[in-house]
Length: 464
Image (cartoon, rainbow, N blue to C red; front, side, top):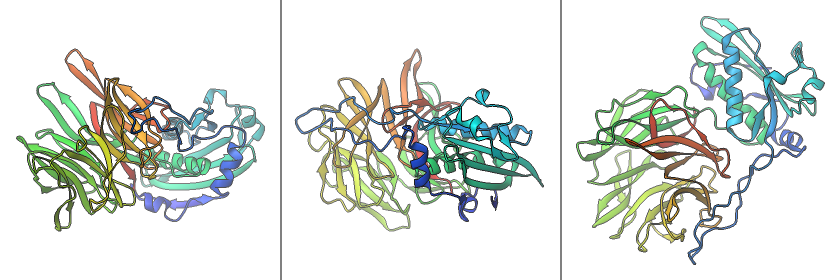
């Protein structure tokens, strides 16, 4: 059992010395998945759109296997915190669509004896994995949380870790435990210990109030970062530090700001014209891409945040908007009407080598590159209405994941397996707007619970 002393909100110190891994993740994945329940692979679907005008097809693949059955035993300790941690771990793993947390009412009583599972009691439930744990008072307002992950089929412990942290940090501990289980069983990092920036929407259709807000990925711990006196739009997470970029309006004039999530301070980046769309950070977090009014259209520019000025990356009379870097920073995807209709293009980071990658009979917008580098998500607007889709960076493998009255603003989770977007539906007084998640295979669509209507999500990296 590894013991870690945890200050509040410090994942690096929580995990930097290493959670004790008692068997390699790949070996565990093979043994746990050998019974036929496999996680969804990154999809390799057939192309749905081509230069002949085929357009995206509603055809999804993956995640059609049974999710992995896992038992989350109630954490010992006799406190409400133990039950809360157990519930969050179960919710996280269920949310992924790759796990099925077994109903606790089916558990055989006394199935953990002196810390060791009674294996046959878990095997008869079909559990392939088992999580056990405890919560104790460490004194001084601190909690000690222990957890163990067990391979039921091989009847062995895979991981054991103890955390000591402040009592109000219990939810983060639960997310970190769920991430550890995910990584051991799937073989890649989880995404549960992450946050999402978004725009909170209240007020009326004619007098909307749009505030910058932030929350845990599952909607918990919601915080409003601006007061709504000036409209905020388009928040974007810095992938390298705890910082947001967003656009705010003073009257009709858009300005780009940076919000420091550690200090709460706001810094003006600049005002770049009557139309400023974006912005998006570079992978190193040191510059921003955005679209600004210029030459009768709109051009993509790069702004150096250290004071190095602005560099134009496009120079045409067309509309070039919504740029997004590839994870390695070598390429940029954007949308443009330079060929007469709004389509997706990829260019080198210096603006050279522009290549069109979408050819469907409709309009493409708001591309976002996956952190894995294998997919680009986008909004598609065609004769069937609005859709969220994905394609490979070369334009192949195009697939529609979901459709609706209005669906837009898609963003990837840190491991690239789940997308969040906003879904709007008409109401008697205008429309509602809800944040929704869906797997990259088009399955497991879920609404995220927020205190107000929400739009413009930006999923941040794993917390530092």
